[in-house]
Length: 147
Length: 318
Image 1 (cartoon, each protein chain N blue to C red):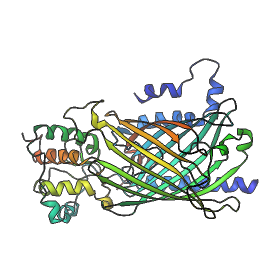
Image 2: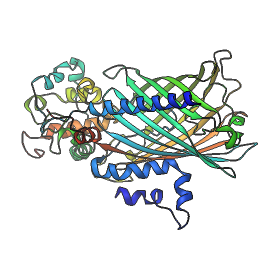
Image 3: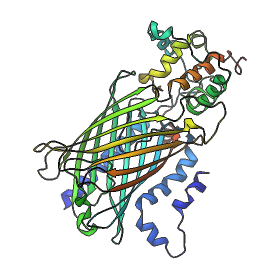
Image 4: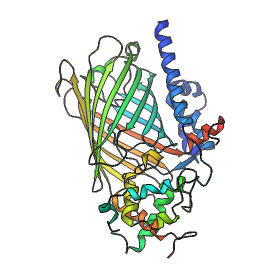
């Protein structure tokens, strides 16, 4: 009985230590996130075929507004409310992002950059990812959407 | 807002019932203890949750976010009393490829008693960095539960309905230490998510054989495009689908026979406020299964939880 209790205690301690380790792994970066050029290097990894994809919602006037809502709900936490860069994610108003093709942005959204902490966003249906791309493409270097 | 929304859970409805209520529901107690801390330290964010209650897809918790979930299952029981089981989940995104989660389980068997039935520690690890044709995730869980556990989060081996008819006073004397492995295979295609989970479990107490089980699911949002305005009742906030799960026998007797199987339509409502509601009505597919399992759940995701905890203890300074 006592052995059973000791085993349970040990396992409970192991779980608590495991969770604490996981929690302490979360480093909070200064805001906005300190960047080196390599953050944007992921954009260049998009396959050519993916980069050449066109945004099917490019002419949809509602796509930017819907994309702004989606950005606020899913992306602003890391990239900042105005996409200027935040605690964990780089600015999406920087030149490398602004110069990227819609297909490249869609590819990054779909696949994430898991090793750098950006989750895959393929759980958003494809039209919603294109709406996000429409919003990102509409951003000016500093300010609100350029429409 | 969180506190007021949790008030039905956290505050006893009548005077004089506090002690009974407090001792009767450890899961509710855990929720009430954690809720104020979450309100103070973390921000709610809108999640895009799938509707499955048993099956898993390949999406993990966002890094640094904590998702708090409460689930309930009402089950009918032939040759015994119907029951209401419940569990709380605390799901934390340790990294973009690793999610860790603690469950606390309990149950009420009608005309019997309400008891705490154990806890589980679950880990899910994404195996591939990018999206592929099929996306595998490894799942590892340790369970320390009593024989009275009835959350039916999975069916394994030769689990049958009559196993759950044992009175709580007897069933709780059985202690199980179990390791459970799952391979989660999931794919998104044209708005649909299709997932298949294969399960292998080993009870570390006694000489029990390896037991197996499965779960499959498919779901799709009611609309694939998002509305230009924020709205609670927009069709894209609702995800509907179905899941099916059951046992596959054990090492000595593998197969679909002498075990239970269920099919369940499922629906999730992802609200812009950050709350997600899930509902599922499960139907037993053979005589070994409970005839009916009604499940519902509520969850909320809090971002920045890991960074806040780290900061509280002086970590994360660079």
